[in-house]
Image 1 (tube, rainbow, N blue to C red):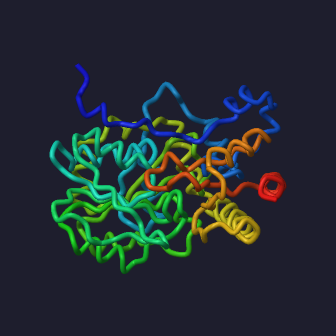
Image 2: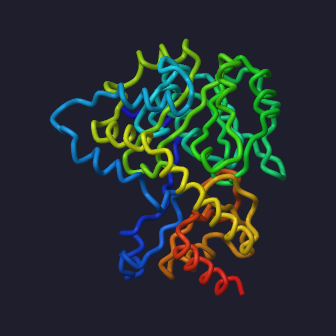
Length: 345
């Protein structure tokens, strides 16, 4: 029999893809602009393709070079590095370490819905805490919180959580705090060094965004040694990743100038879009905007024009008047702006 907690789950809602929009609207896939999934339109370093051409798919992955690359990039020792199949893979293993039936997690909303899914799957209860007017989080969380999840820059709102807020949160609980920095390369500041000061803090990262490896599913984290040691005991064989993922990740980390050039272009375009569409300030590679009309109708008008953006109704607490737009290339953004002017005139 299925576990009763499964009845509480709502499936994760991903951004729409090229094939779905092509079939629904009869638009050629090559004519579609995809700005709904926070992907990097510039892709990964050319070194990734070279590395993938040399893999031996009949062999199991050997992640040592990848872990060494992550350690060098973050400035933390390899013993504190944890990896998994995307950020969700890292969090899945962590929740298996800490959460069980009767526990409670703290989740400021709106935010990435997978935190709630992991909580419920573990048999725990999510405490969904609405963010303030500027999307700030409250540090007044229930005293029996076992884990807290928050994202900075936050998805979908794009704002950073201040160091003062994070320290207050850490010092108010004996639970584990997971700080999701998936979009931090696009931001002004990272709080990853706080792991050195707090033994209940884990900072998660990914190579899906700035490094352009969304399709390879590679996430990682920096954790106190006592947590990292237990993580390696509970993680799936080979951390659930493939030899292709290992090769791609190591190659991308070996070409930081390419990643940083992509980030600079995205930030420049983010500023251009922000200025015209008057979205909320963002430190990520996307913008969060309020819509006068129902967000479902607003987004549908873009989809019918072959431009994929994200309706935020699936984010708990976002309401029915918000949409999220990924920053694309200049030409993709021009397509979006042209449609925006037409739809919002």
